[in-house]
Length: 433
Image (tube, helix red, strand yellow):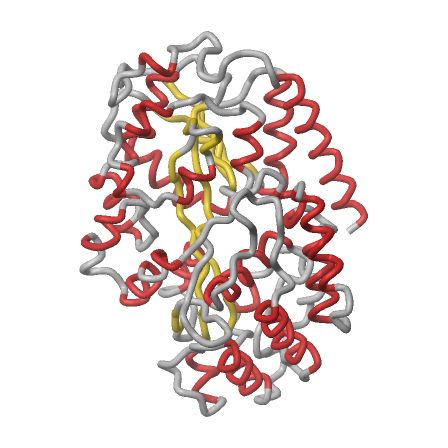
């Protein structure tokens, strides 16, 4: 942890220095390239080579998009996959040397900060020219500052509840019925824990990964009728009565033999999906982009449902990556050609729906999955109830190693919960409230 903290601090410092170097300088999108305002509606497809960075967790979807574009266009996108932990340092260094790629995709919760710091070109006119009413809005909103728009959805990664049907059968549970409330989640997880099978746990939680924790626990709060942030992202609301009921369920599991998988308390996020993949977890929240790859590769049956709240309902975290044109790009019109193409229903169908991944086009979500796995249809149906939290300092407040959010969960799940209220206030302070 000490090494990870140092690396994270160096990366954050590198990014901060890089952003400071670029702040207040060139007008985004006019850094030697085509002024954003003059970009044709469809951009330019003239055989230009474009560079693009994306994160390793979304490698498969990114490759599908780039391969589909390159096979049908004169322009060619050269994709570079960045290890998740290297993104901040890599972007920070590239800002200092003005060597950002033409197209940059990033974690949607990090996008507001990058936009505030001028990393992306202002493409308001181009985005407004699209049928945005037919697009998932969360990733557009994340890149909007003072009415100026900078980003579009790239890969929408949603969180869902998954369960191991084989373990459910062994535990005497209905394998076709996942949890519909937090109490059902607790009782089903405890039933699997009660099997007392070696290495098998009722559930799993990434206790030291702020990103995984918001991805899994925020939907339970949203489904319970809570908002985790105020409208401008400067105040936290993760100490509500409903939030405490959710923490209490996990605290109960933490005190139950085999309730939470071994390593949950120390899990930094690097391996948090592995125990379920190995058939060792009864029920847990999971990224849908990851679970689709398991349907035909694991030797047990998987159930999928929305993530329930305290009294029912469902929600999901509209995660994944948004993408924009960097301020370093001198090929803005060509980069926009890739982005506008990706928003077309034809591309959304080919790149995402046909691969059981989540489209950003609402019409494709509604009509493009007729032959899809039923579990994909269940997952898609949660999007209308989902949220994408927007806050400039979200990373520092929630995702960063050692954040107050991580400390809150450690106290609520593995401690006595006495610090939940004060840590919620400290999260608010970090958010700027």
